[in-house]
Length: 112
Image (cartoon, rainbow, N blue to C red; front, side):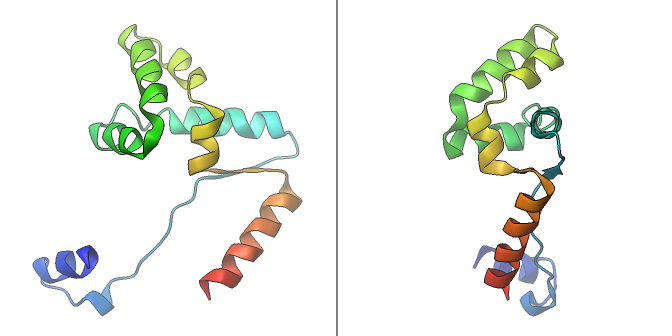
């Protein structure tokens, strides 16, 4: 409903809008390295007010508070370290190549 309204407001027809899904995906034979890459990637989002509020609304207020505290001290790396596994797992797809491929195949079947 919101997308249709936005399309009409922009002078476009809703059926002409392509809907995409962005799932940050980190694939590696080194699972710890993949998780660290995901953590650093996600650390770019909380400084942006829209995402900061979105994470809070979705139940990650304590994680965002810890991130903001580190960022307030000028330490983005410490902020990244405070991104919880729970937040990463809710937003990202992280894993070994065969596991991620299996998840994508299941996802593709559901989308078609």
